[in-house]
Image 1 (spheres, helix red, strand yellow):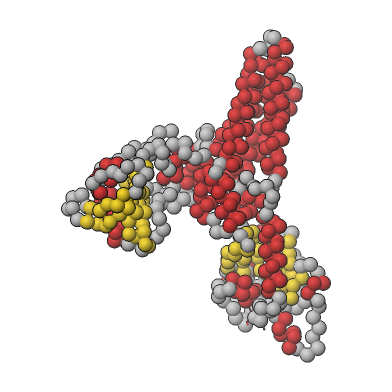
Image 2 (cartoon, helix red, strand yellow):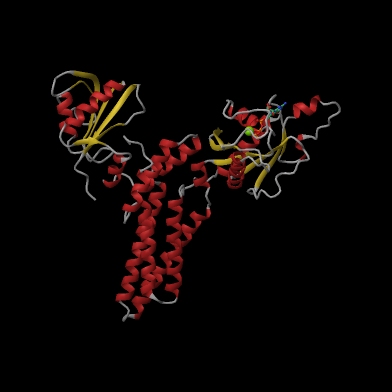
Amino acid sequence: MTASPDTIYALSSGSVPAAIGVVRISGPKARDALKAVVGRVPESRRAMLATLRDPDTGETIDQALVLFFEGPNSETGEDVAELQLHGGRAVIAATFAVLARLPGLRPAEGGEFTRRGFENGKLDLTAVEGLADLIYADTEAQRRQAVRQLQGLLGDRAEDWRLRLIEAMALAEAGIDFSDEADVAADVAVRSLDIARLLQQEIAALLAEGRRGERLREGLVVAIAGPPNAGKSTLLNRIARRDVAIVSPYAGTTRDVIEVHLDLSGYPLTLLDTAGIRETDDPVEREGVARARARAAAADLVLWLTENEAANPDPDSGFGPDRWVVRTKIDLSERAAGAVRRPAMAQPHFYQLSAVSGEGVDRLIADLEAYAKASLESREPALVTRERQRHLLEQAESALRRAISEGEAGREDTFAEELRQAAQALGRLTGRVDVEDVLDNIFRDFCIGK
Ligand SMILES: Nc1nc2c(ncn2[C@@H]2O[C@H](COP(=O)(O)OP(=O)(O)OP(=O)(O)O)[C@@H](O)[C@H]2O)c(=O)[nH]1
Ligand SMILES: [Mg+2]
């Protein structure tokens, strides 16, 4: 792959207005662009204070801190210029207007800087995915996982496997070439089969770690469900500490699914408020109930809220494996004369709380935190963080298993072919082979200027 001849520019910092706005320019004309707008090019990697001017009128646009990174030692691998401007809308607009008039320059597309970095061998695809995750990381655990990806932990493993596979393939080919010399052929066949067996075990071990990495990336989903008026929206608001959902004394208030993203000691958790589940003739509410059921069924955990301790959780809900029962509005029963409350610790996941007074809510939150920790924490950092990665590793692993049985049966040709399939899958994981189709998918997630 070769670098695109266009020189691209974009605002790489956050939305304006801001104290500083960073405009990056990457490509063969980056140097010329600097000469045109600030009159000179600073020494590579040294900051320079300069006046930014419109080259046609000579009018001053701003005072800027200017940096230049000479390719290939830059993030994109090309010449990169960086203008640290005052982050006002008009400043950025005027700068863009000037850059747009320079020959060979055009605005960057989303993710284009990173894509050039990838195409110039600055980072492999798993690292690109890590970079995207780092930008979107909301919690500490997500950030740590993204940094590991960006550092290439999975990419390095995959590349190491691929190189060993290539070695096994070379041995297999040699075996075929020497097939008239039985000793040599047998020896190399054994060696290549050994490599394949070891690789298959290593990849299978990584896959056996489960989907922890993917779940950490996406966050656990906890759905609040139950009959209408149980106090679901009130509890969501209490946990979120803001008025996200409408609360009213009328049964059937909530219709759409409402999401709140929580950070529980560094672990991401999405809490869903759903419509109260009941039979109804109202078509809008019926749609809400259908959505509530669907989201609760797909959630990692359902909090089943009920005002009445005896009320059974929706019997035909088909909700996922984990469900905790939460009895709500205990402040009301406390006021009622003679009400006896069951001790809260009687069952591990039976809660009694009042979302209005707050009583009992802390225990629920503490248990949610423990649940998130138990589901997402691992001693070994998870290396597989996306479905794409898992899928390719599974392909490689099953090709290896087929290769081993072919090899053991003495069918060298198909043995070599299966090894090639495995190597292909690993190459696609890091982006070393035939990846055009997956590229758009991955870079689409990026913002412009990254
Ligand atoms: N006293 C008391 N009232 C509560 C409590 N939680 C909720 N409520 C009241 O119960 C009514 C219903 O609360 P919501 O949170 O809207 O109930 P919901 O389960 O979301 O209801 P739907 O969206 O209709 O399914 C409101 O009037 C709340 O103020 C509580 O812990 N104690
Ligand atoms: Mg509600």
